[in-house]
Image 1 (tube, rainbow, N blue to C red):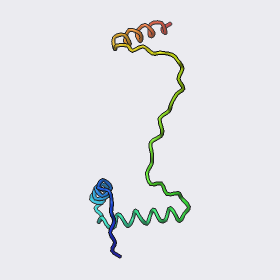
Image 2: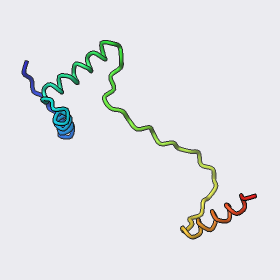
Image 3: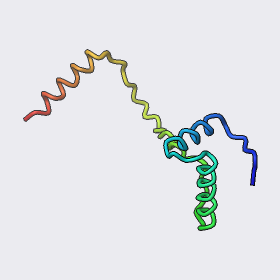
Image 4: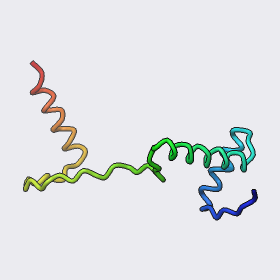
Amino acid sequence: MRTTLDLPDETFRQLKTEAALCGAKLKDLVTEFIEKGLAARAAGQPFTARSRSPLPQVRPKTGVRHPALTNAELEDLLTKADHHARP
């Protein structure tokens, strides 16, 4: 059966690239993806459109101010801490 799909440009480019890398026809690759998605749904697996990155962690405000230090000042602090940590 013939149909028309309106895909985002980036999705279409990814599909064409994947088809070219696999040596497959675009229609065969799209058919495979659709069949796999339908089979997963029939098996009770939830459909996830996209994986999302985790949300950033927000830490509570401590009230402690952190001074802005130069790289030289940071290096000095790290060197002093390293010397104090040695037995």
